[in-house]
Image (spheres, helix red, strand yellow):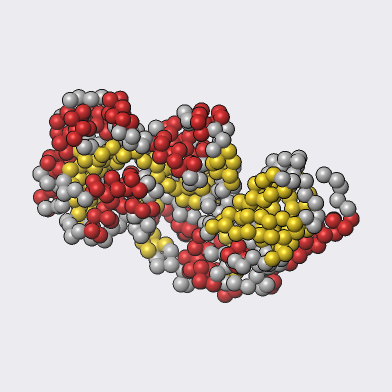
Length: 604
């Protein structure tokens, strides 16, 4: 491309300056398509304001030649659909392999507010930045630091023109701030979620101008409260406290992946762990032997009590501690939110509507088996008046209307012992957290034969292997054939952020890795990272499933001694989707990435 003229350079500078002054600007990272030089090109809308929009074409073809004042009509895809933008090119330049350009609108889009106003209900807030702003300042001036991208911190606010407040925030975050107008209701809800009803009592982090979190480190109570609050905001399932040579690394497990939160000086390690040990009922003097404990901590705007399990282990650089946060909110535990296809959900619902039999969910630890069973229980108690009792280790969610029993090895309450007692309480539905041994399996089989619906989990890799696992435990095949109603394998994959996922085509090598060479050239999506997903590219997780409804044909196969391979062959004959089939379907639908799919199906 020819060098820019002085006129073009001035237009570029003017456009950039105008955008920097425009307080309604928002990074949206939407996929864009436009026609130029007789060819269709795919790009990315990086920002939009009331005057125009910016775009980036990654790995741009040299044949794509843009010039200032060319008129373009660009189709932009975003979470609510598609919108057409019409404007003239105000500036353009190449940056390595990328072509970057901006357009000035010739027609103002009717729904510009959907791009320039942020709904915080759909945003993953990064507590590392949110907690740096003093609560009183954030609540009084209605602003919230929620993510850091490209060396800038984004501030959701009611008034992007409040220069004094933004300058104060800039001192606390020690970075350039970029304000984004947020919808008033979603901003109020987010501030309430982070700071509660009493902002003065909310945990806060770094002081303005401080190089380290000295105040927190000097106060182990404040430091521990901040870690728990930050983990709650980030929707983490675990907190990892790992001492090392350079300090204590704090990490959160979010959507199954560990994320760095902060590094605490080693001097704060002993008091921090002592505080958590006291809360957990552990022996603070014992540092060599592993310990387990638990406590309940009030978190969130409603000060909901969250059950937290703790465990310590001595390592080379000192004791490490892991805290597991057990969520008590079950509003999202519905079958519709698990990610099952309509056909799979129909099979699953048909099974849990039966008055007796066994439903088994299989998969490795952390694959969402218990969550699936909880969703099933919610459906059961919504549809009928039934006596539902669960036996769990531990109780992960509190479900109103269900009697929940916790297994405790210290008190010698095992699954089998608890199950015997539960069956004397006239249950209609029994959920067993896990079938671990022959005794528990035998009692569960007997319970299903005597008119109870039993839901449980097994540690096996596939639906077909559930039968062989029960046989290995010593359960007779004819009893399995008579009681098993459904075996289901599942895995969890991270869900792509719908706001910023980027489209590309599947390569031949990738299609072959999936054992589907015919998929070469099909469109798939990859993570990018934006303000909605805290720059991660993913938002939440979704299940992939393999359903084996045990009808008469499968019952006969099991009773006749069919091996796992025979059952798999029969599943394929009946065109039942395997794990890899469901994973590929979600890949092609743009719900997850190739890397996530390969990780899930390779492990299976």
